[in-house]
Image (cartoon, rainbow, N blue to C red; front, side):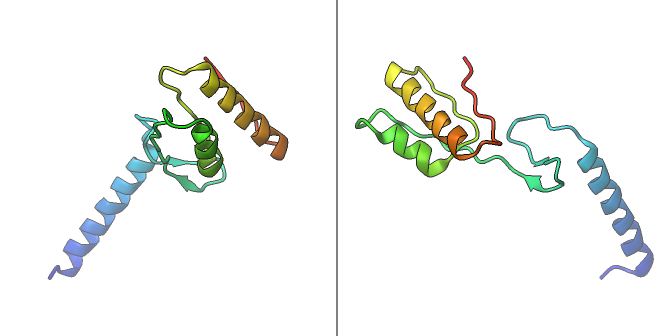
Length: 102
């Protein structure tokens, strides 16, 4: 059991560490971030193998509704599926910017 002075010192140290942690800039795209609205955000990463039947990528995109997609060794069908998904998102949310980059 801690005594009053020890607890006070530990409490101050915890506050300093929390403040310093908030001031650190993210070192990774997977690190916890604070959105401009002040809400805390932690990216979710899903890895999906879409080598299967035609239409599986489209289904995965619609169910996950990702903010970013990385295609590894993309085929023309996968690029087209991603373009269609981005167009659907843009049409459904006029204020949301969707883009496909190389």
